[in-house]
Length: 212
Image 1: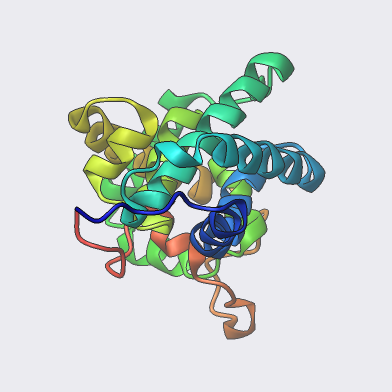
Image 2: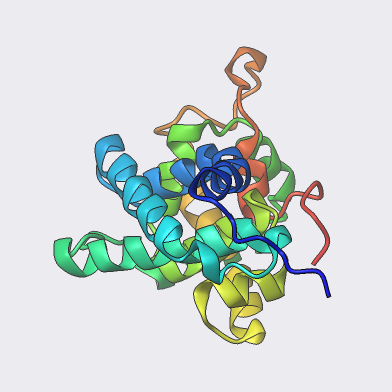
């Protein structure tokens, strides 16, 4: 019987860096949209990295490391939220859903598509921050980060049906935020020069996301 030699500290460190470092940019972006300042997001990532290092031996499948890291980060952000009481300012959800319903009733999908195509990262962050985190996290994990429904359910520790419901409602809420702010953001015009990042498209259901 072949006996596998114990992993050395150097080997463990190298394996940790190989698996974790490629995901830090996306994790930082996720954290930045849930903290008041970039420094807070960086602190959350540092905390996540420490927790991941301490629990690294618990990672059974290297292929699942990305979802594992997001789950740890969600815990860090939740702990910080409990301490800071963030998200005291939220746009009323009923009003946002009314805006979405008016958009659909008025057959304004083409207008909305044009508006969304002009959203930049700062506008997307504002829109996500304006709705409850339960909804924004589900939409972001699926439409921006490309996780499947079951992976999101594992990250958020909720049933898969809840994930699907939150994504559906979250998109409606984001549609309301975006359309309410299009005048302030100077969106929805024919000025082609204002078209920039299309990352916001994925926040309300881009066809480029991975299939669930």
